[in-house]
Amino acid sequence: MASISFDKKSGRRTIQFKDIDGSRKSIRLGKCDKKSAQAIRTQIEHLASAKANGTAMPLQTSEWLKTIDETLRTRIGKTGLTESRKSAILDEYLEGYIQQRVDAKPLTVKKWLTTRKLLISFLGASRNIRKVTAGDADAFKLHLMGMKKVDGTNKYAPSTLAKHVEISKLFFNAALRDGVCDINPFEGIATSKRTNPDREYFVTHEQIQKCLDATGDPQWKLIIALSRFGGLRTPSEHVRLRWEDILWDQGRMIVHSPKTEHHEGRGSRVVPIFSELRPYLENAWDLAEEGEEFVVTKIRSSESNLRTTFQKIVKRAGLTPWAKLFQNLRASRQTELQEVFPTHVVCAWMGNSPKIAQKHYLQTTEEHFKKAVQNPVQQTSASGRNAPHGAPQEHENTAENTVSSEISEDSSSRGGTRTPTEVPLLGILSPVRLPFRHSANISKSSNGF
Image (cartoon, rainbow, N blue to C red; front, top):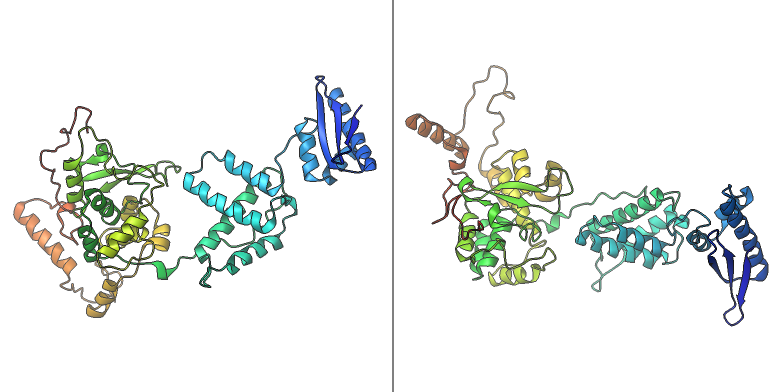
């Protein structure tokens, strides 16, 4: 039999019963009238009896469980009388979900916590997830759209707003799979993140050289060069770069990417040691201490804030800091590589897909406009597939054809084929040259560094 205790001081009632192992279990009802408490006690007795006898609970008890408050349902579940399930209280569920996602990166968790805070602020911490409607989801999005900064501008850019909606959809999808809710109210809201063209900026070689000249710190020069000339993600890929990853004799380096490592076979990629980058790597090697493991020693965490210092360097160089300081360095590199190499090659070096490159990286530069104005657009392909039938094929004396003819002449005179790395296009690649006193088998210590 179950009993009801009553605290006269607080006005709260508690149901107590003896479990099959002899232990005493309690279910707090909070402030509850006597008649309601007795009705709940009757159902608890049915549940305890069914558990003790190994039988199914009565149909009326099963139906009663569907109608009770989620808090009471959770408390009953914790006693073992019913199958325990995750809390449907918004704050509690989101906290539990984020804690269990041990596979998520720290930066991802940080974004989730921000969205959770926004959802709780708008919907209420104690809101039952089951009672969140599609209308609530629409209202949440409109609420974010209406939030303003002190200067009256929108607090969230379209891409940021879409990200919060996307994360909210993730939360409710998880709740749906856990059986905590019956629908995902965010399912019908589009989450396509629009890029803002006003934040795209192509950083020229002249501008980045001014930045390199504006700092006397070799490590900062290396960080800038790896970002602009190597196309590395900053700072996550910088901090993982080791000297053992620098293959001097092959003119390549192995870049480890935490952003893509959860995809099979994409934990690392091989990137050329571009001619613009090589001097800064060589200088860093010459200055490295004996036994030094990492290439970049200025920072050792992916959480490092490089933006503030780099912004000062840009200003010191006499330039106005551009939007997305490091992202645009990487985008600038991908844009100029795309002018010379096939898309699949560039994406393999940059560690992204053609779709992502097109959406977030490739830019239209001033050089594109200049070339379009100064040079006639060649209407026919090299194979003449698009030319009118029977039309003669003429080749313009463009820089590309000039380079090709020089290679052909050089190859025929030497009786061999010139390697791709020796083609002087845009100064992107240069012949392999080992740094002074370094080779594939020479290192700074017996440990190979």
